[in-house]
Image (cartoon, rainbow, N blue to C red; front, side, top):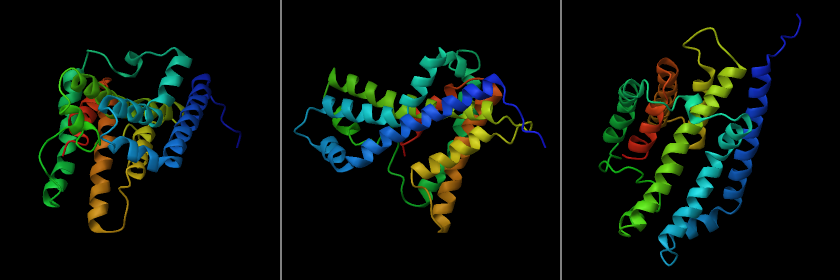
Length: 235
């Protein structure tokens, strides 16, 4: 059987995915190699909170943002190319929010719910909010960008590149959404063989696959960003 020839768009997507993988792995290697230093630095109250937040935000951006940013600059693509536009925003958000219900119920039933507080799992958030104006505003802007906007948008771009490289005729067989969901489960360590860990992994899969499917359906990516800014790490 003759080998199927790739289109120019598929070839470009192939290169783009390699760039994203290489830059992400390099950034992750730096973090893992100096993890103890980063943890100590982030929690060191003797260091100015804005400096701590900036350093950790740059590290977070390196892992979830640098690769896609490099590709977008290389291809001269805009955020609008990936669905960050006004049309369909409300529909995208309305359809995306219910995807978080299973994860929310899971935190409640397992006793992990401690109230609603966006970015509560980011080490510097409480110190930033307690630092007063204008430091708190600048610090929260960095947190929202690194742990909210870019972490969510990262999945949008990667999913789009995967679907371009490996297109599917079945609308429900969204390879980009599937791979991104699995990637998120592995990165956040939501793995295990206990019933609890399996249920948690399923709730994460619902969020990631669902939000990317909504993005494909509406053509709008603001639902993804909304989830990562207001709901992810908020319970």
